[in-house]
Length: 266
Length: 266
Image (cartoon, rainbow over all chains, first blue to last red; front, side):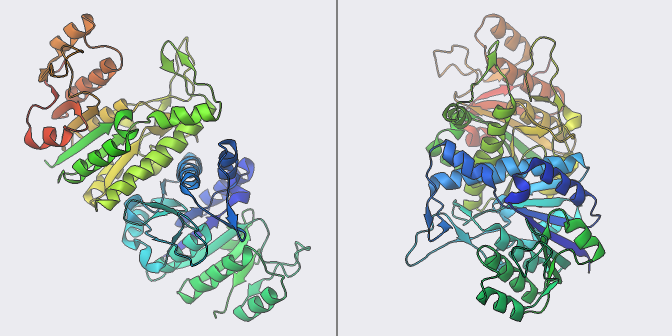
C-alpha cells in the first residue's frame, strides 16, 4: 500500500507568515504524497471585527450565522487556501486548493441541536468523502490543500471543524492507502504537565487519555482533537501523531519521538 | 472533435442573486461540457469601501495594490467561486472551483508598464495555460469554474482580466476541442445603436468592428472584450458569441441569432 500523509495545520501556523513559510518548506521536502487540511486563524476574526459583525459564542462554541459563513468562505477558501497553494507552487509542489463543494469532495449535514442553533455548521462522516475524486488527483501527482468549508448538496455551504475533516478524510482513504495522520499545533505534542514543554507524552493510549482527561490535564480544544485521532485509528488509519509545525517533518520522516503518537484504540 | 464551451460571466450576473440562479439553471441544462470563467462584481468594491481601502484608478484603469489583491482573492476565489460551484452541485453538475494557482492552471507575468504601476496585475498568453490539467478534469466529467486570479510561480498571486482569461483558455484548448466561446454581458449582443436594445449586430467581422470603433459606437469595456474574441478566433476557436446571460443557453443550443457572432478574423 502506498503511503499518504494527511496533515492538519491551524491558526498558530496560518497567522504567522514566517512560521507558515517554514512549514511549507518542510512540507515541500517531504517526498511523500500528502493532503493538507487547514483551519481558519485570526484573519477571519479580524475581518469580522472590522466589518462590525459580532461573533456569537454559546457555551464557548462559535455560532456560524450567514455573515460569519460569508467571511469564513472568503478567508478560508479564498485568501488562506490560495496563498498556501501559491507558496507550494513556488516550491514546485503542484498543489490544488479545494473546499468540500469542489468536485463534490465533502458533503455535510447541517447540525441540528435541541437547544443551540449553531447556524451554518456541517457535520460529516466517512460516507461524506468523495474518495474517488481525491484518488484521481493524487494519482496525477496533485497535492490537495483543503479548507474547512463543506456543502449540503442543496446549494448551501457549511462551516466544518478542520480537525474533524482531517480525521474523516484520513479514515475514508485508509482502505486505499497506508495513511499517516498528523495534527500540527502550537506544542511539541500532548503534555503530561501543561507548564512543561518537555513533558511530551510519547505514546498515548485510550486508557491514559481517559485518565488525563479526568485529571483535567488534557482539556479544552485538545479533547475533541484527540478523540478525532482515536476515531481515525479505529477506522484503520495506520499512524497518528500530534506535534508542532516545526517538528512535523522530522516526526514523519524519522519516526522519531518529537511528538505524541496515538497508539491503542478504544 | 468534442465540443467544449468556454463561458464568461461578469458582474451583472454575479451581483444579482436571481439572475445568477437563472443562469446556473440554464448552464445545468446545457448538456455539453463547459468551463465557466467569472469576474468580480460589486462585492469586491463594497468590501474595499467597508474596510476603507481606497480604490485607485489611473487613466480609468484599476490599480491592484496588496490590499486590493487580498480582497480580490477573498471575493473571487472564495465567496463568488464557491457559491457558483455550490449552486451547480445543487443541480447535480459536478463542478470544481479553481484559480490560476490551483493545479498550476494559469501562470502570469506581472505587468511592467513604463508610466503606470498597475500593482499585482498579471498578463497571460496561451503558453501560460496548463491544458493537460484541464483536460484531465474534463475527461473525468468535472466542470471547471475559474476565477480571475493567477500566479507567477514565485509565490505571488496576481489579478488578471477575466475576459482575457476566457479568450486565452479557449485558445489553448482549441487544438483538442471544438471550442465555443461565449461572453455573457448585460446586453443581448453588440449594438449598432447603443440606445436601441433591438439593434444587435448578428455577425461582426473585423472590418465592421474597426468602423464601429472609429465611430465610437463600440467603446469602453467592449473594445478589449471584442478584441479578445477576435484573437480567440485567430487562434482556432470555432464559434464565438457575445450575448446576455438570459439568452446564452438558446444562443449556444439553437445556433439562433440571439446575440452577436464574431465571424471573420483580422
